[in-house]
Figure 1 (tube, rainbow, N blue to C red):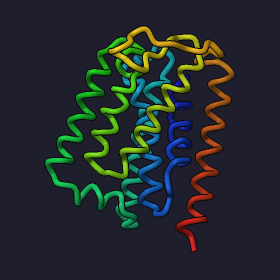
Figure 2: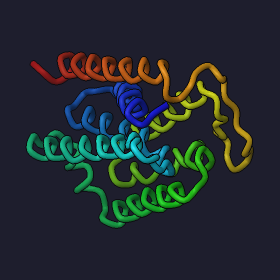
Figure 3: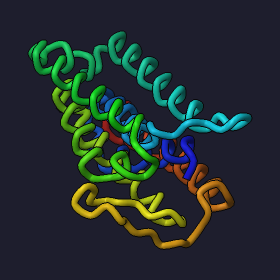
Figure 4: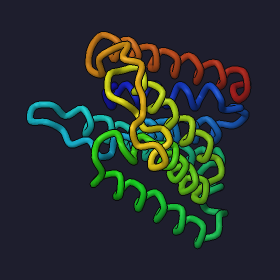
Length: 203
């Protein structure tokens, strides 16, 4: 599937598993789901005239900056959890994410970045930055692998132990199914966010 679809589905999946008891927890779910969903395609280089991967990364980055800013203003908890982490933990976590993404960027498409090992490294790094980010990043990443397994190029979930991977060959990555999942992810994200805000946060 394309990058924007992975972003919306990653956010929806992370919100679905988030307990949603605080605004900070919901912010973490959106940020982690977006980053986990998008960073599994960090090795994708856009073709001339097609900027899907770039758009997805910009979207995830913008969401991260926007929600961290809102969290800081609202004192919702996510930014506080980052600031109260030991500095060494935050630095190591950031280095793990940067190293994993850098190795992914130079890898062949659908090898290292489409494995549980890569997703686990992103989750580990994010969790060292803030414990609130661990599960959303993992869920966003797994949602990416699951969506890509539906189409026609194998996904090596257990790379490097099993490099071959598998797929279900049910759809094309850039056709009608991609658009359907994009809108389903977007609608589900909005509905889940509204429901959890009303149920747990808004008086």
